[in-house]
Image (cartoon, rainbow, N blue to C red):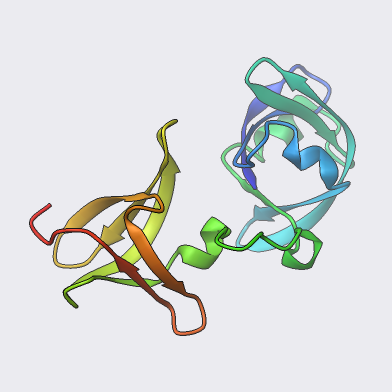
Length: 159
C-alpha cells in the first residue's frame, strides 16, 4: 500500500509514498501494518494528511524523530480482508505478481516480478530467459487466470 520514506519533523511524523490509486487511499485504513525486523507490526494511525505529492503521518507509539527514522524504507500494508473487492477485469498488483506469462503462440516469457506505473499505463516486469517490460493494457493482456496463476498476452517474443 506504500512505503515510509523519511522522518518528517522531530515529533515522530513520517513521510509516506503511497502505492494506492488515489493519493489519500491509505486514509481509509485506521491501522497500518509495517514490516519491521522481518515481521509485520500493527500501528494505529494517530494523524495523517496530504503534504504535496505524498502523505505525512504520525503513528501511535512513534513519538520522536529517532523512532520514525527506524521505520525508513519500510513497507506499509493493510490486511487483504479490509481491501474492497476489485471490479471485473481489475486486479490488485499483489495478485498478478508471480503469474506465469505466455503469448498467444504459447511461448512462455517467465513470471511477473513486479509492476510499475508510467502515467499512461501500468507495466509488468516479466522475468524469465530475459527481462521483458509488457504494458498492462486491454490490448495486450488477453486473459488473466488467477486460479491457475497464468496470464496470456498478445506480445511478440522478439520484443
